[in-house]
Amino acid sequence: MLTLMYFARLREALGVSTEQLDLPPEVQDVSGLLLLLRSRGGAWEAELAEKRAFRVAVNQDMADSATVIRDGDEIAIFPPVTGG
Amino acid sequence: MTIRVQQEDFDLGAELLVLREGNPRIGAIASFLGLVRDINEGDAVAGMSLEHYPGMTEKALERIVEQAKTRWNIFDALVIHRVGDLKPTDQIVLVAVTGEHRGEAFAACEFIMDYLKTEAPFWKREQTPSGARWVDARESDEQAVERWR
Image (cartoon, each protein chain N blue to C red):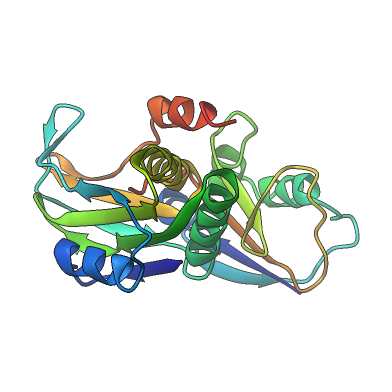
């Protein structure tokens, strides 16, 4: 089971703040997860398109497309940060 | 190291006093205080709300301060970042660094602030006359952090 979290503008655009997902066997890293999420179509496909600027964190560490995903991981997807 | 993410305001003087307390070796404190402005990208800003990613925010800030400590000879650092609803002139962020001399304290303070701007998971949503909008990340913040790489 994965815990997925969405923040800020992405949370609003996708209409969900958190969800649980059974780890599908074909998802081994961040790029695999993004492919799966994009396949939901609509806002998912548009907001998570490769040309869009967003960040992914795995277990609260900034990740990239090759970061490995394991069962039980907490994965967050969010826009570029704007604090300070 | 002290990292605090909070809704409440803070007292700059009191915070600096605590940071320097009991260490007569400190010769310099460099601090940065960020404030909410009433204008952004040409539009009036009536207020803003700040969202963050609890858990990761603290972890990211701790890592940034750790990096600063390895890079410069500093004693300690304090980071306070507010979340929730804020209005123009409100204090939003404080970074303060103690060291023996100003050079390292200044550099470490700027380093922490530059990384905070690009890596700590905070997001601003501001209220303007045409409605609320999420603030976009700035290219200039990315360039600022590149200087340290």
